Image 1 (tube, rainbow, N blue to C red):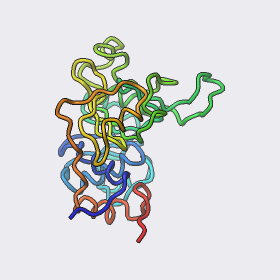
Image 2: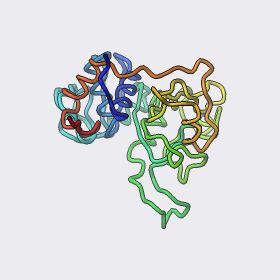
Image 3: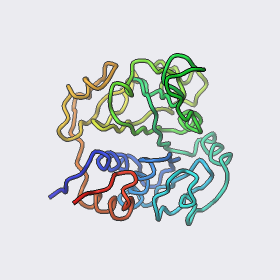
Image 4: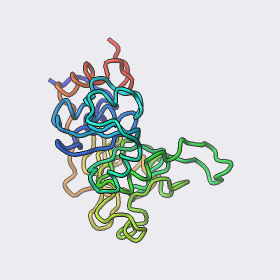
Length: 260
């Protein structure tokens, strides 16, 4: 019998399943860290994690609080610099990057810079790109994890921080970005999404348990596509939940503290 779980736990479990064993992945702060650690402890023990601050292939023995946390360095193969990480991306040897953002559009473009129309006087000033633009430009596959509502899934970004498929088929290549790179999956509070191979538009592949097509449409500001063979996202297994709660995030920093 599957234990009760919350949305954060579901998202982390779904995200961890996207990270293949033996692949390389540059991991961002927050839920991506928990997902990478869970992946290493379950189906992808040989996942090679990399961090923007310079750590390569650490053993994630305790959940780091950021990509520069000392726990991203424990047992690592190399402690280098941001230059080494970005060079690895430029050389084409990084399979995945795992990012977040305040806004995302139908082509997987991200905004993490501002909310509003005036760059100098925005409604909200956000942290900015950091390394996100470089990572999404150069890594083979970009994973995004984000809550799902109309303010985040927008028809037009307030600011383009990080490129997805830009304006559609061929646009990344026309802008000088490497061919066959780009957005791969989006894990939200409602669904798991990929991208249509021809139009490059976001497409729902599975709905989370209890979620309907209408729920997704009501919380998306652009016309979302849906796969013909639309599936239901598998629930977290008891083993995933146990490892997530006891070994990955026992303090509830990402998944929240449990009561009762």
